[in-house]
Image (cartoon, rainbow, N blue to C red; front, top):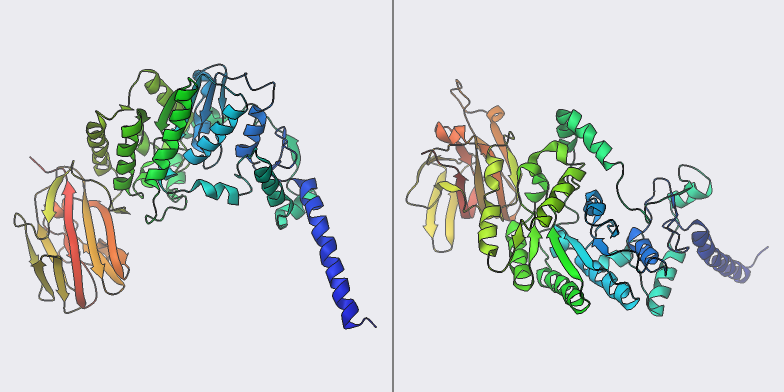
Length: 492
């Protein structure tokens, strides 16, 4: 019979044995190919750590002077054919490429004698909120370190990874197999144009596929921003390029419209202004016909090669160039892109309220003496210095705005309301030939306790025919309205 004392020792010995076997297990598998610095193989269905392995590849003695152009970017950059920039260009794109990582990698490359003549950097919208330090928490994106302490920490990070079902499948030879790859030494998407041709053949199917996908929020919460840090990182890249006679070409990737509309565009404007103070750059980030074309998007984040070709074409002709002198005119032009959304076929769509709609006409605004409205007995509205107070005495309060008629098929309702409780915001309308309001002919969106801010695309015909009814909340109480307005293109 084993005593408790011996049981403890056996347990400790077993734990120690497992702890010693874990590094051997992870080293043997090397799922992300970092431990072997192996850029010639990968497991089927598992993307290796390209952020790390591309640095390993570039720092090989035979590769240090091989490329005259380096293109740093996110996975979106994989759809830019860098051979059209130069026959000796290298595409360093990797998942969640971000300016802080670009700066980190550039410092190491320069310290090891890599001297490209040109450096292109693709800038993402998420650079203003995504922290580069997050890369070191990811097995797929942990950055390359050339200092001994950083290198050891990286090795330990991979050696002592907790095994999971994919590791077991690799060991048992199920699903995942080690195969040769050219993804690091030749990182172009050679099959991407074939995929684009499929999208072109059936636009309806392409659109149906996109509509099933959520906007690419990528951890976005609209609460924490690092705009100053992002600008400093890009400015740091420029300083290094200037010191080493490298031509820097910064550009901002174009967006898919549904993803664009989820983000706080006011913050992105701040970023663009601050960046323009430090350097010139090319800006493709705004709503354009491309943003709405389903044949131009693989998903709600990644565009197809023809948009990549367009970016290269425009940069070579010095178009879309933003400077400290033209930044305000440029932002004004970008804001006009929202007009394209007014002709969209979507009937109702809720999106981020933090967007400058000054390029649209005001069709109605609660509290503006130029506009009137009707209300029922359950609704009392008082204008005060701190906003509009809405006193609701029943479960069915409503107003009917009397505004200017719209010229386009869609208009945008902006709502900013502070609610003491969870409630429902609902708009009712009467289609042609319908005499009474019904739940069937309405749109509902939820309000949470606290501040609620959103824009809502809706058919402007109901504003024009006077049947639009807004049930701001569905519960009695006192609410504060900072804004309730409608924007669009007014009929002449």
